[in-house]
Length: 137
Image 1 (tube, rainbow, N blue to C red):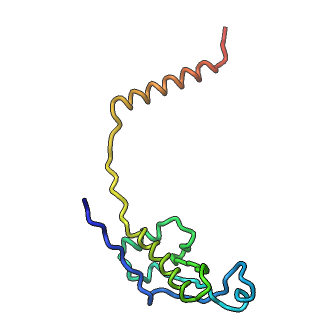
Image 2 (spheres, rainbow, N blue to C red):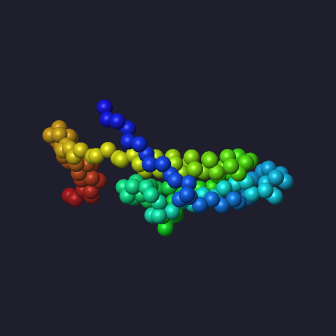
Image 3 (cartoon, rainbow, N blue to C red):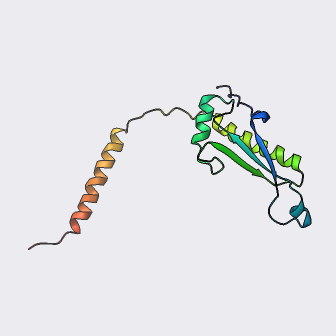
């Protein structure tokens, strides 16, 4: 059994926070207080290991822009500080996902039985197509 690899921690000095107004219902509080947080994390300028940076850039996630900046909007809570913590936790979860190295693929060859079944299926499919042809007298 292998030991789990520790994921690198996101440093808060590499993260840029912007207080913005939250969307949705909330009455007067939503209209006048900027409690939501937008987090911006430039991947290239971070202190993450190169392999983690590359896997993070390669993730198919709409929160990662084309120029390699992770943008997370947190507005779940009414307090600015709790939304900051939520945004950092979500960024750390993304980094944790990228830190896990995918298992190496072991190349295998199809068995003799599998090759025979494939050829039989191809022959059968060719016979079905041959039966669709026009009959010439």
